[in-house]
Image (spheres, helix red, strand yellow):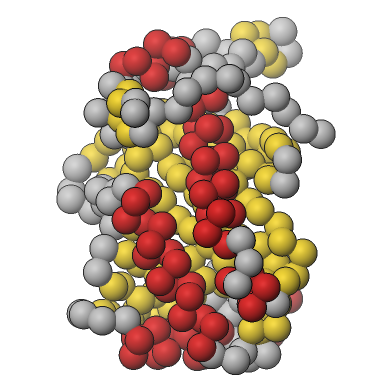
Length: 255
């Protein structure tokens, strides 16, 4: 099922930035567990100061990780580099930004630089998908006000949701993308700078399935264009979740 997106011009940025997390992920099939190879490989290739950390999933035996769908793509090792955090699992690599978000004009080149190095190591059999996830938290201390910020109308058992706490998760298919949207009022987040924020979370994860292409087809093809497409789709989904009044309150800046 396809959905019709709203016909509105998208801001290039917001004066009141609600973004608290941004992550690009790539999933693949490899001849050996990527977590055994990629951390050291990227450590040697990327310039500047770096730090490798082992994550709790590393303590889970590999046969159990392989058999549990919840663990198959879980990160096992984390590499901190510059303004970015690279998380590596047996079958996945993700690239996240440190707070504050440096903007797409910086994030996209970092994604291309890191993933471009993967062509130099001969372990990848196929790439199955990539995705872009942005998590925004709009400040508000009142649940009813938080709900009013979002373009939605929910009724359960004949009761319209106005000031009740809830968690909403919905999958929307548009063109070649699967958009997983989660909306969580009464949420809080502790940022890396020590700041605590409270309000409503809009979590948009946009997935592009590429049907198991080999790595040369991915990076020698339209990867740059597809990064732009997936970023634009995610951005549009976020703004489509908001009322016009909410967008205005965030200080949209246009071309």
